[in-house]
Length: 632
Image (cartoon, rainbow, N blue to C red; front, side, top):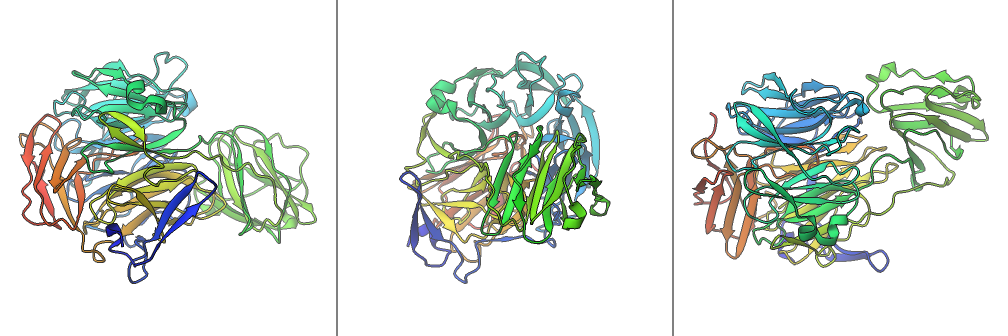
């Protein structure tokens, strides 16, 4: 039996092949007692809303109130953003922070006042209302104060907010990306220098990726301790190497080679899969939600549709019984739904605010006929007789839903494949090792994170599928086999049950501090999900958690600090704030290292961004150690 499967039931590997080019090895990872490796946390653990909604990016993970537990900040797109306070393994009811069209967010003490801040970038009203980035201060008593609005920044259609120490002086500089306005001829990737006292000064425009390339990740791909940037999301990827004094150079060809032409990258996750001390990259890919899409789950007789910006009318659907629609999602400015030839407008006042998903049923008599006049924007539903129903309409913003009991077989668009990539870092140049490492994910995927989920000493991969909106979605978990290959886990328990949604962003953290890393992710037009990892207690594998505070002198924040841990022939590297989120910056300063059967650590050093270092005293394993200065 392979070592990394020690916590799990002794079941054989299975090889799945789909054509000549898509094979992967899988293994059942149910625990020895038959329970899944992961279980969904219920409302007693975290009171996440059960109603489906639009999302923006991954959650932001940070100890916002500095009580030693990682809190969760989430954004419901175009509605509000809220924080769930971690009370030691269970979470509070959500506390609303900001309302409206909120996009990227970053957590960190940018003004060095001892409090954590959230720097938030609003949207720009489709370009009609360019906005400014704003700050919220988080007090230790969990009160929240609105801070400055950076009105000297160039107003924009905000997207990503990336905090990092670009000049290695200990303070947090800032990169903002945006959907470029027509007036922004130099692009909308802005670099700002932290000049102290809570102030930022504009430095330069950074290189831009092609259309829709406003996603961003911080990573030190050349291992020189200066943070680099990769911009992505559209028709290519742009790698930008950091230099002295907040200078940057476009090194895409040298670093990425042909993979600079990778299209529609949705997230980039750092993973040192071979424990050689540098970060490799795992890239998920998914199309942008602009073109209309339809899909079908024939087994369960469900038809899903997505429309945006153009008139639409689908092939008449043959439906058994009444018309049952689930998770109707509509957005400003068009929310109206009309039924029958008389265009009776449906009333959803009993389902709460208009931003969330709506469910309803119509009888043939309630929707009889199809209106000739359909000039009003909205969704139209009509019963045409002989069990046939017609759906059409015209809305500016996305409209999507799932229709049940469809017994015909309508033609659907489906979703094109966009294979994910694993790129190995070889002295600052990336090489494709996807197939070599046994990873085969041809379908669209929206995000991924690395974490040693079984504590065997090798970083694994969790991948969020775009999925078929007409079906439930079992997510993807790949377990690392000693840096030599990955095995796809089956029966891991991580399933998104909601219909009408597609994949979103994911983060990894040990919310209950039991020694194994858990998962939290959201689905677009769906829900947030927290999954508890059940490895500890079922495994004899060892681990260590290093909690990083400010530098010993207090002049550098924890964000960007690096733990380098050596055990045997392995070198583990962990960075505070490492995230695959395309638009946000987390500040998870609890650095988790699975160690497998290792019983001793040879060396562990934390290096802050300003160059200060502190040796981690590791006498025993399977606990946490604090290093640096903390606010008590």
